[in-house]
Image (cartoon, rainbow, N blue to C red):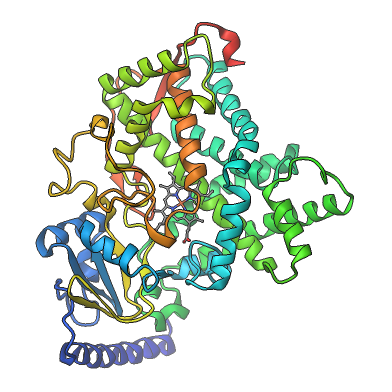
Length: 504
Ligand code: HEM
């Protein structure tokens, strides 16, 4: 570092000290009662004590401070919610106030300045985008129409596994590739062919998980916004470079689609989501901007692939880790579907036990363990404590869903607990909310639920799965925006169905 930079850094550090001292004196003098929490050290707050496993630390703090606590990370105030009753205050009683996002720098860059659904503030543009997405892509009717697309991709995956005989399968690769194909075919249909499809698919698969990990990575620029220009960890630079690649692909896809539309192709046929959006844009000029269109496409690709693929990997790992549960799930499939038949989506409502397996998987391994952080639009009171305007509010679903106060024998994988239980994915039970709750809850839930059930049922019905010789199942988790399996699941398939034609 040259002398000038050193001088700037020293000056900035002094200003930070002065600013922090004044700010926190002011806070402590005010009449408000803030949530309890660890005090940390001057300037840095609790940052040095967070460590690599933030989720474990957050849960330890919950055991110490209870249902709500506040900590300072650099200049940012973070409030963590750890009880169903306070979740209800936030996502139900004060949903409107808590419907803004606390958007990290990486997410801000990757979404063209929060011009998407997931990171946008609660405003009319967000409402319009979410409405179009849910109405056009995820209505029951649209999902029925797009079943053929899902079926094609799932059958391709099953066929690929079958063709490779007893070769070991890296489950996350299989699930990610299949989810990506499903999502992209819903979005832009058969537009891309051959090489383009292959290259773009590969690029998305390489970039999306890295991008999501950057959203969850602790970033100095988020804790000290005035240092954001320095981009000390290079997160901004990395995100920009990923976005550049994605942006090129999205522009190309949009241009090709526009050309196809102008040539009058597929006017009467089944419309993919991008076609619907482009037609809407043409009809109602102000409905959605070009940037929002790309933000929305990216949201669907990023929000819909990694989450679903990771959940599938956890579900299969838990089934393999609990042979009795696997046996029951396969017995149910044999009875409902039959070994002389393949799974179809119309079987899914009858697969009650498999549905309970999925729910239990998402209870023990919530894919988005702290939900997507929210931020109140005004200072407000929760559980008798003041939460300052613009604080970052995380709902610790991982803690709540495994809390002994809320669940019996919470660390045991026991799908039976969900049979006949009131817990659904809809976020109405505040001790079980893997898809969030309230107006910011997962917009892709109807698709996610169908896809998870359909693909899991197909994998477990079509094959028995075992670990490669000499390997043990490792169930450890790595914390990030998405809770990943630390050691990828590798499994060997053994065909179960009675007729080999059912794999073709
Ligand atoms: C296992 C699968 C999935 C899980 C566990 C999951 C979980 C979540 C969670 C926890 C949130 C934040 C909720 C909150 O803050 O209260 C969220 C938001 C979102 N998800 Fe999902 N999701 C999944 C699949 C999908 C799919 C398939 C799509 C789209 C095709 C999708 C699109 C979105 C979008 C657009 C948002 C932002 C909603 C908003 O802020 O208004 N997700 N998801």
